[in-house]
Length: 125
Image 1 (cartoon, rainbow, N blue to C red):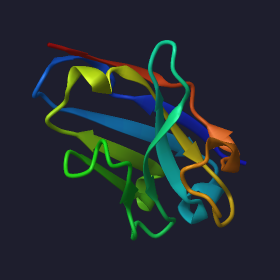
Image 2 (image 1 turned 120 degrees about the vertical axis):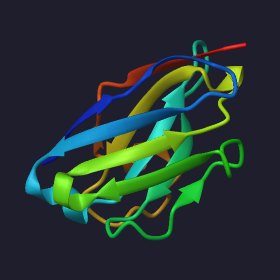
Image 3 (image 1 turned 60 degrees about the horizontal axis):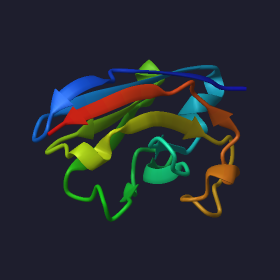
Image 4 (image 1 turned 45 degrees about the horizontal axis):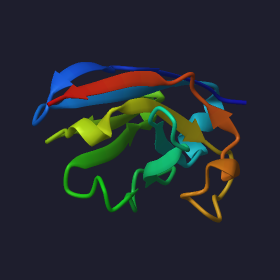
């Protein structure tokens, strides 16, 4: 069992940066692939980034490539999403997600077993 809590969201101007954290409880986190998703008002939740349990093989949505970086520190049971060069269209509630086993379809939200409550990020123009 893994419990996830996001933090680090807020209001930032376009071009700015934010760093989100996802604190996990439960020993299973260090062996759990994790991902970040986001949901803008009136839109479906969409995939943002994925990282496997060891911290290798990050994968990004095209819309955030070269601007966002996903990472994790298993010793601290924490995942991160560094977001740079933010744009107004990045405004959304950001969620971290994890799964206790291999993820067959990493961009599919329904593959993940554990979710945080979300953190609001707002980028002003």
